[in-house]
Image 1 (cartoon, one colour):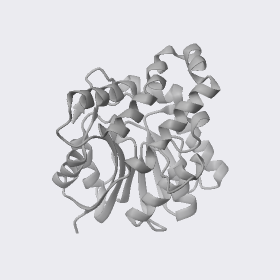
Image 2 (cartoon, rainbow, N blue to C red):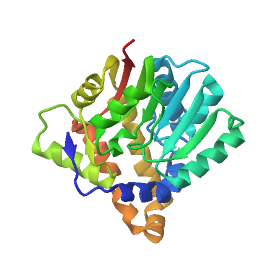
Image 3 (spheres, rainbow, N blue to C red):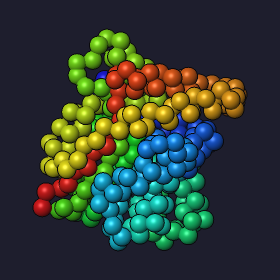
Image 4 (cartoon, rainbow, N blue to C red):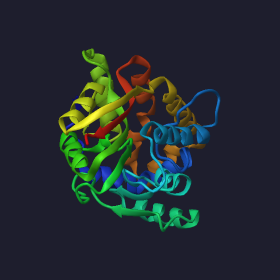
Length: 278
């Protein structure tokens, strides 16, 4: 695991309160990578990642899903509307919570998708009350990842599942240059640490979860950052960010760093499915 001790939780919260509009402009309603199979548009690719994770986790209508790090509600609204789940989304950002609530209302799923502005490391759900804990690109921001998975295991009913997509540090051993790239990504994207594939499987197994699938999707998602980098340059978003909040510039300036980390193996993008034993 690569750690960045300078990251603070209040900065993560501020980042998402301020940068959500940038995400929406750059990428769309899903604040996560696209998953490509060919030459699909970024919008289609982002939707494909959500749909693939639904299939991997075997999510079906009527299940209760907790979406940790729900962002603007894209995945939660899909799970509520297209799959027929009862979804509770959790975000640290009050801005995102309001956005997701309005988006669910416009999508006609406000009776099946509710949103909380809470810290994922302190939020609680009754033991055995959840069918699926879903989290796409949020666990990177958690300070105590093993403790989070222990709590997730308590929330799940027997046979319940965890569906996680996460940015990962590359496989050990990493060179000094690779570690530097990962550290720069942590710093620029406000991640207190990035665990490896082995770290994630260990944390979930130690929490009493049984791994059922682990996928490396790096080559299918890395195009995301080529597109974001090019859109930033074309739309002049860096200049806009400098006017609104200069502290966001480190985030924008590290898009190429993240792409380099993927391309060199310093980082990976992983999908993890685990089940609480019956």
